[in-house]
Image (cartoon, rainbow, N blue to C red):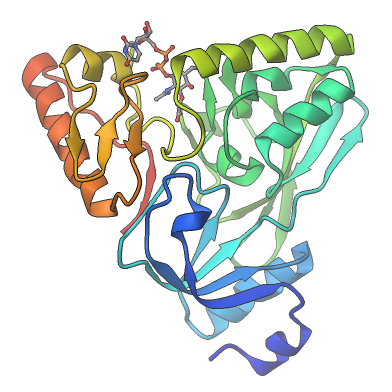
Amino acid sequence: MLPAGWRRRYRGLLEREAPLAPRTTWRIGGPADLYLEPASVDELAATLGALRAVGMPYRLLGGGSNLLVADSGVRGAVVSLERLASLHRMGDAIVAEAGARLASVVRFAVEGGLAGAEKLAGIPGRVGGAVFGNAGGRHGDIGSLVARLTLLAPDGRLERFAPPKGFFAYRQSQVGDRVVVDASLRLAPDGAAAVRERTRRIVEERRRTQPGWVGNAGCVFKNPPGDSAGRLIDAAGCKGMGVGRVHVSTLHANFFENGGGGSCDDVLRLIERVQGRVRAVHAVDLEVEVRQWL
Ligand code: EPU
């Protein structure tokens, strides 16, 4: 039972037995016992405090674009940051709350004639998850743009700081058990037309080489040093390989597509099959990149 005092003050969304599949781009996974969307940073802090006070485990949900949820769902609470999605400009920086979509950040930068955010163009997901996992691609990652971060620590304190060297690495950060509240992204003034054109080219390149946002979770595996997991999977002959309703994309082999009605179990078995083939053909162990709530 959550504290009555907290419940009386809570203004955000609260749902019990909330389906998580529609909240992930893979469209896979069972329900959460409790699903919460706090409506402000104070409410987020109070909510996490209340969950801790009653000993209810919780997980943070960003855009659900890099996430595999168990078919049986998750016990405890899922807290989404989607209502904390403001964007504002401070000089040549954009301060983005954790729930803002990367696509909104990119659009805001284009409209403001600010260069740098185009490296995030075409990446699904939201700022919090992107910072936590240092999302990016061939044009660079979000960590290279972050000038300042606001994190909510487990004891309820807000920490504001410039991330030191080494805070971000390939697809990881030192955020740890803290919650990303907002990030200030360091950009540079440029002509709006030039930024728009570079953004357009990057989005077009992604559309050509990767499936769209729905029905997959982006790259399933991390790239091994100096190589591409997609290239290795493709060269091992796995394109089109399937388990149940989930198959390896024929466009980019590091994407697994849910053909409709696919399950977490299908994905896990396909992961094993692909890892086995890549190990046999290339003697490389592929490490899973998507987060798993199993
Ligand atoms: N390739 C193949 N077959 C495939 C896929 C790729 O031969 O099925 C070859 C390509 O032709 C290219 C090379 O592999 O020569 C690299 O491919 P790509 O440029 O698509 O890059 P990637 O290393 O496979 C990385 C990121 C992507 C990001 C792209 C583009 C990882 C695990 N992947 O992929 O990120 O979108 O660069 O910037 O770091 C993600 O993190 O979810 C993700 C999709």
